[in-house]
Image (cartoon, rainbow, N blue to C red; front, side):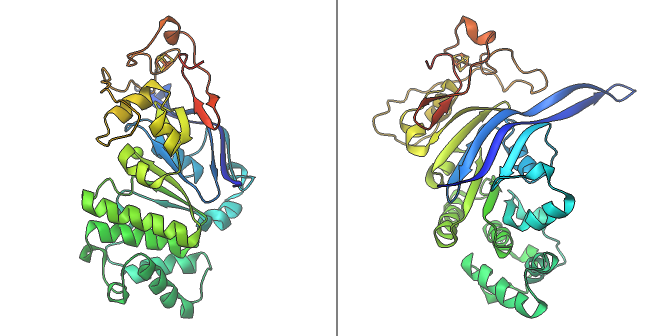
Length: 321
Ligand code: SF4
Ligand code: MG
């Protein structure tokens, strides 16, 4: 499939201010030189611990956050060099879904109006058409006419996420970036929402960037998975390859904590020592060396190259030659 989104050497740094003079005393390297491609129609899972920079990747793609360096290309167009007007025209095509859709819904606006407003704002429907389009997307997302004139507080967490998805879908996006969309939900509801994502993809040919700290969540939905650690992409592979033949010690540690059986893979629990270090002064060499049970001498000095170790399987580790 054709690439839909190409991220090349992307960096997003935030200045750290300190002291009375409010001087910049350093930078949080939230996204630190990462590259990956999302192909048309696939679901790319981005996983890592909280603080690994996953959300910042999503926010930088849609320009909620400025990049520091590198490029984000959507269908070959460099998003960060578009004019405000150009970006505004493109905005419906790339929709962001958040963990808590409630926070982005106005409590005093009926949900039918909230969804309809976005359609009218972008000139995607006339006043006459709005209600039937809104009804269509609500039904697609498992809601009904009964819900259209209700207020956000009248819905459960799972229903609110359905509303969030419906609102995104109404704008006929190509790409949906979902940032921890099921993390706040009960496990049984999580499965329903994941199934909804899968169904919509099959029916609408959507492409997803699915951000989650939970490997068992991305396992069900994603065709390829990228693993982030402290702002860096440490490994990217197809789901089957990543689960069946993980190469990076960090990926192995994450997988060893997932309580699901994987055939052929004898899993020993790999426990990581310590917490994720500060992204302001990340460790030298391989950023993972302070926690890696397999670190060797050069790991603290040399940055491992991110390279294709097997077909379409990328990894950054000195042990993988
Ligand atoms: Fe561990 Fe060294 Fe590989 Fe980094 S490069 S993951 S420290 S073995
Ligand atoms: Mg996050």
